[in-house]
Length: 233
Image (cartoon, rainbow, N blue to C red; front, side, top):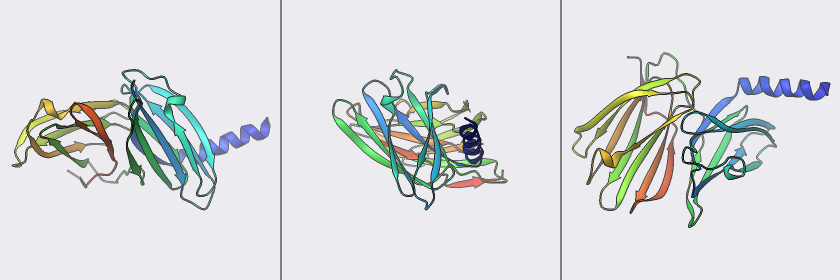
């Protein structure tokens, strides 16, 4: 018992200094997310994985130990109960380098797509704002939705500017995102029959899930985990 307790303390101490990897999970009825977490180091890796719903409530958490270059498959449907709020942040803390492959599946039709997260959430010293960009296609049968996710223990605040193909801002929004929670933006409500980009400013590092729809059904899901620039003003 004493050895187990000491080992647990060592694992917690290591994870306290760990990098944070984050991505979007969709676990509402009809959809599921599976992640394959690969240890890319020549040493044993300890990692903790946590799933949150859109309100920031923790749904599940567990700790794994993986050998060098080994992969752990985690099907979230085995651990969390699906409901309409079951989408948002999947957080992974690890003391070694990881490669994460996400499988997004429609339970009726099968695999939607895969996405890859190869770097942790990046914080930068002397930064006031982090800037992200996400392209959209709202044309024909295609629509785009964004999910802004806060992987931090503190509230994040920021703004978004939805620009049309001519570079004009058609809508600007600002607000806050509670710790570990997410906000959904259906871009078709703001702009139709056009393509363009959404410029996103945040005072903390965030991640962005992009849902692409065809004929009203989700077709692909992607993650943006890195900013394109930072500013000190």
